[in-house]
Length: 424
Ligand SMILES: Cc1cc2nc3c(=O)[nH]c(=O)nc-3n(C[C@H](O)[C@H](O)[C@H](O)COP(=O)(O)OP(=O)(O)OC[C@H]3O[C@@H](n4cnc5c(N)ncnc54)[C@H](O)[C@@H]3O)c2cc1C
Image (cartoon, protein in one colour):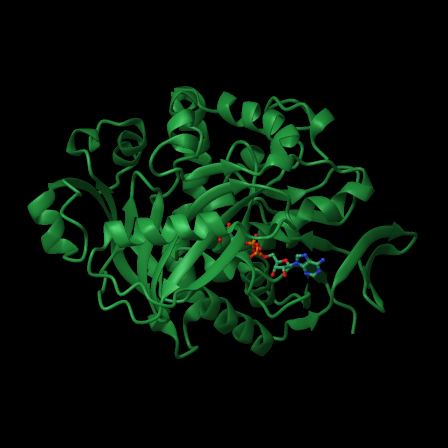
């Protein structure tokens, strides 16, 4: 049977998009080389927040780079071979950190994050696994209490947009999260978010629901995408598939697929790690961030997960064992009673553009080809709205937001300064 839409990549974005399209009656094929949702989507920190719309590049960040890369906690690193690409990407990233631009990007990100909890609840309805999403707060914990200020730009923007934020001292913080070290003297609580108790299982459950709605899920390694006289042809290992309309949702791998078509996008593979402690001996009620080490900890079905690090490196470079050791020490320091034995270790790749926004929408000059990738640190929470927007575009409904900020041409047209010369 001819499919209306073929989606390449079954991460959170591909799966949510398949659900939204199938709900509107379209015939959908979803292709991934692995089981649905078992790459980047599997290992994230599980934060699903309407209030996580603050981009990564903030005013004055450049001054903190030495500390972020060489200080005590070192949440940021660049693999040696990646530096030539990093310079161009990093400069474009830092140029985004003006107050005006942060506000603009936050406005765009808000529209993608705002309905995240409601849409996940809708996708889970009737599956029997509705409890995979749990309401909570986001606890941003500070060792230096004087740094915890609700007037900082990221908290001010959240408050301006109606976020319920609260500043608490050390005693109150330990009442809320008793497992946190007394080294933390203050915290900002962001109320009104949720967390996934197992991002990987959340993806599997939604993929099963998509199958029930008629989505065809194929396990194939996608090798190339090309256009012939009848439409798109997706070359997979061994066979190929014809498609009139294609959505590229391959996360960090999307850029390599598009390059032979003459589409160059400044997508970095911003690698992150998690350690999951199967028998932690402690329990967290919320998503908890150590604002120095910049990891997020959360109690999940498989134990306590600590997820973080921003390591810019080649997409296929092996994991860096030094970062695993560093994260283990950081988890122990933040949670002194943690039973840190035999954690499972994972590395994944955030698909990151310099402005923290994804690409959502058509590629000009490539009829029937759409983007749904580049969700950087926010892809779990932005996936359901991305799916709704793509479903709007493919059913010729006018999306209820202006998608210009997420356009596929914002870098190539120079709307966001970026020199592509060094970015392969
Ligand atoms: C440590 C860490 C913590 C994070 N924490 C959070 C968080 O708390 N909240 C949040 O919202 N986001 C978080 N993120 C970001 C989030 O995980 C990503 O933005 C999101 O998973 C991206 O989803 P995706 O569907 O675009 O990509 P992916 O999940 O990577 O899916 C892409 C899919 O494409 C498939 N694919 C790739 N190449 C091929 C090929 N050649 N053939 C066939 N299939 C292919 C892959 O197998 C994969 O399944 C975190 C990320 C990391 C690394």
